[in-house]
Image (cartoon, rainbow, N blue to C red; front, side):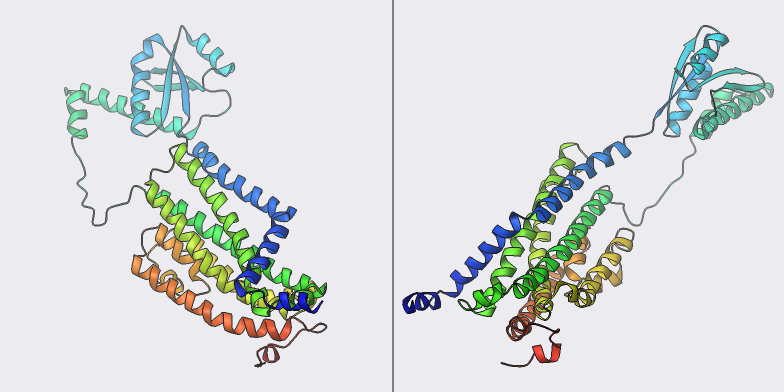
Length: 405
């Protein structure tokens, strides 16, 4: 027996961390909650590009019937609608009775007869505002042409003269034709980061409380050191979080590029995903230390809620700024400042990078600050975990948890 204990005590740090991480992975990967969340997130990011494509599939086509004698009027309707970025398709019918029958049967949206007094339109229920505008513009042009002809002028020359007048626009700042796509990628990156840091961070805290309340932690700490247990748990859950980020992200990018909605280069899209993954690693490392410390200070899941609120607040604040400010004002000073703050940087900096407003040096400086903060937090988290994880009963006060051993 003493030989067995001796062998256990000789487990190296790397091996101990690997064993704990492997155990954490096996438990979490078999969890129904993890599988359900991963499936929902993946399906959401697959469905989003498809839904967006249908939502922006272009204006619908309005079908209008005219009699043969009004064929020229019908062509004018089509031409005017095109100028207004609308689609109107003209169908020629034999007589007014056939036109009204087509409307009643739902074959066309409207039947129109045009004479000197204007257009008489027949519809089944109501005339859409888009069609009303087209009819009004064509009738006004027809009335104007009639007046020009009565005055001895040439309507075609007048129309050509009017059409030749163009507005000269000088643009001081050119629009990025891919700005909408960049905003979509940025919001997706920020949303994934927010959701995953929130869920897997709490997963760490809840896992610590579960082991503490079930006394499993006492058995584990008889073999390995507290910091090894903490590091292995964080590493295992980090892999779970990375899966929850990469799977939806890759599927969303693949669907968006396959159906032509994303025209940004593959390198830019993959680069945004890679930076998001790197920021997840940095952000999760920092938040995991804080969540694990919180879990070690309590003995029941019911007591965990009071400690979660102040930890989650920076995540919520970062997401609020990300979704309410960055899409409309990518150069926002508030967002830029918060993208250097370690607790909000993991959400905001990847979004600013995806929007093309964060240069590489800002990314690297912010990442260095966040990693440095994570290293400092590791020292405090290790002390809190060591001083609290074996204590049961009432919540361990922070001051007492931070006492040097």
